[in-house]
Image (cartoon, rainbow, N blue to C red; front, side, top):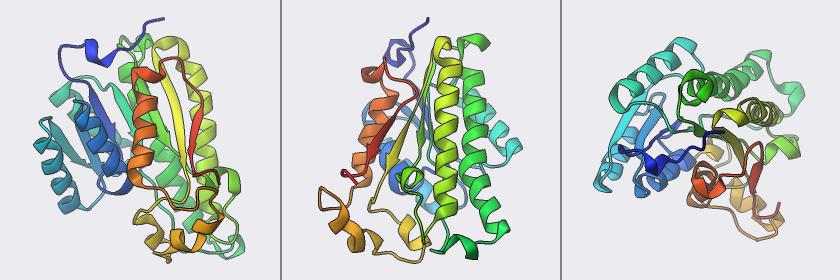
Length: 258
């Protein structure tokens, strides 16, 4: 089996982070930049945040490209991967980080439209980007190998009752995709793993209607505090790097023990 070693390339390795403009995505983008990766930050609509991050990354001495694309849309994903290949060459790492949640609710109050929206944004995006990445990375298609890291959630195991059962279901689906794909491409030079963040201080909680949710629940965390986006980014980076070269089809729970 061909082993992927990013730093053996003459050009710096390339990482794409979906939903990379804020939170865990932005922290991950900076972590890869510090390691010398060329960084592609995908975002949906917040151009200002993406450009500010691009400036931060370029100040670290590496290249950064921002791409506005709805990663749940197959044509937009195809266009994005073509654009990346044209500018940087083949992708070395994909971080599927794009995801949304909606207002806290019991499942029997969730509409079909909302459930479909969550699944499309969180699961279809992961599927489309992983599929496109495999076709660039896999030795089956003439690639040099690579790594995919899917950002799931502790909710995949807890079910998130009375808050986000739809979100939890989408992350459970992402975990199944991670495991299945990892086994399909393990002998093609591509490793696929996931991280499951728990209660992390990010802007996402405001989307659910409770900006201070971490503070309310942190006493239930064995480590007695919420996590930082940078702590999750370290787990993502490790799974993407050659330090985890014998790891595939598995998950790191960044939940403080919850």
